[in-house]
Image (cartoon, rainbow, N blue to C red):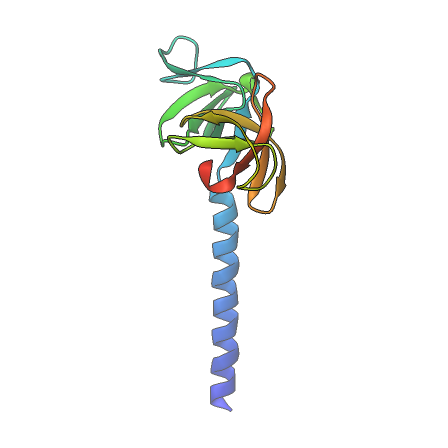
Length: 152
């Protein structure tokens, strides 16, 4: 009899721990957004008086790690951190290339025609997903399919 009470208590404790981990994990999950403006200035602090560290183009994805008024502290695919005004961001699904040479194809198939090749750091809007493939669109209107391991 004593063993059954211990088993129930242990299951209760494990369930509580798992629930807390799930809650904490979702609270810690950073929000992902993309640049919706043509060009966005990424700054050293939350305001226009801070230096522009670098600029990014439309569809550049980033993780929001802090919010301060209308300014969002972001982390990009390289782990760099900066601040951007929230008006420049949107809830559009986006990806960015992470390999030196990425082929964008006509179909979701490695044997399909290569439409164009891009280098590392080119952002795209996600149109749809099909298995391991992502249909993407560049800000200039070019559309094609890219394999998911080539992007962040």
